[in-house]
Length: 108
Image (cartoon, rainbow, N blue to C red):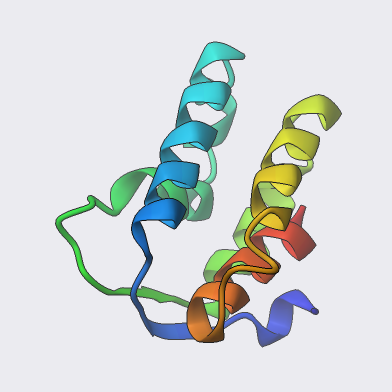
């Protein structure tokens, strides 16, 4: 999936997706990459800004393009961890939630 096709409106994430995002946050934090990640507005918005109290998300194509550019500064091992986390959702998700994880995967 090309980044340009990653606009998602009204995304509602399941608890397992929230768990995965928490896991990504934990791993990134443990690898001391917060300074690099906070430099990217899209990465911050997609993984950190949205609280779990928020029921729906709107992620624009521009967010994914910025995410993809920012991901180049993330060490390969961390990108692989995030990609693997996204890949685990490919068989269990549908609709917008599946598209979200595909966009995460393809943007890395």
